[in-house]
Length: 240
Image (cartoon, rainbow, N blue to C red):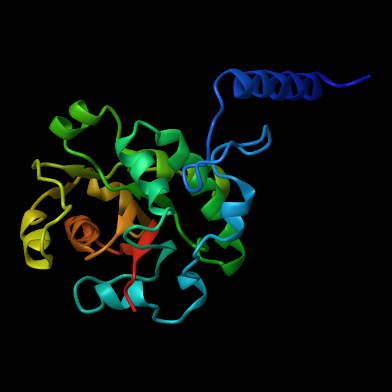
């Protein structure tokens, strides 16, 4: 006889199939209908995902971006973020179109995909880049929290909240490199810093372009005694 777990799984598939007929779900990349076994992104688009493979490269472009600015152990962005590429919809939908669960699922997929590279070895906790309360109230969620949750579910690494956003800031979109850097100065502060002393923390966010936000976040904790910092984003602008 089928187990309770099998029955529940079968019922979920039937419910999803019924919902897909009444209100079809679509892939954010190609906008084609998803099958019952494709939760958020279709398999075809996943197969063609423009991976950076930064986690396999020594002193990769993302690590170079932060070199000399703040000490980091390693860094990776999972796929390339290019303007007008349909793959940017994964980030746009997660961030602006009320689809945080897409970010969570995709972060789980990303973490699963890079685990074999040993990128997560030795990391003690995951810290999502925080969002100021005023912006959180407006958007309703912090996409970095959902990204951290997906990574945590894939790796078993716990989430910590030892960085706080202490100042509001404008969106970074359409700002110059200098303006992005200026816009992020003093935004973040360490919280209960003693809890991350001698820890290896992973700061996570949705996308890295100039690195200004992640740099400001890292600066808030870089002087915590014994701390080691690594960075991960779902996407990375072309940094080569």
